[in-house]
Length: 165
Image 1 (cartoon, helix red, strand yellow):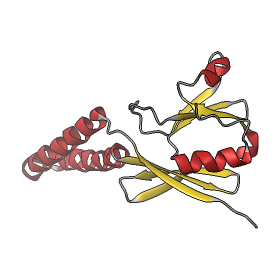
Image 2 (cartoon, one colour; image 1 turned 180 degrees about the horizontal axis):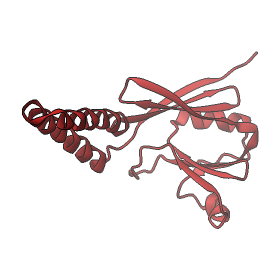
Image 3 (spheres, helix red, strand yellow; image 1 turned 30 degrees about the horizontal axis):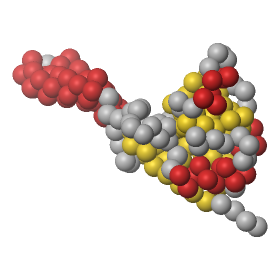
């Protein structure tokens, strides 16, 4: 059996708003703890709630995506704070309509379609832009950043649907 295996990791751009919220929650937790040790239990409850909130915001502030291509299936995992892994979605590439760079002219006919947009990329438009757009099953527009080896592997199974411009 001839299976192709390619994996690629992409770090999501840090969101400044989430980082600021995490710092604010940590400051609130510390201040509420100090006030709770003097004035009462209500401030301790606020300190615990702010600490838990800071933990969950911190998980989502550091985010990475891992793409795994194995024999006609593309799996996307989300790695939170380099410690937790969640499987986000699995795509059967037999249902692939088109895969092309985000700003490619091949995507022009799909611009006016009402599709669900999902973004599993780094969130940065670099020069040159390495993000690709995949129209999946006529219902989703998936944006992700595969490496050249992954694009070549997908192109080997669907050569008329994959464009590299």
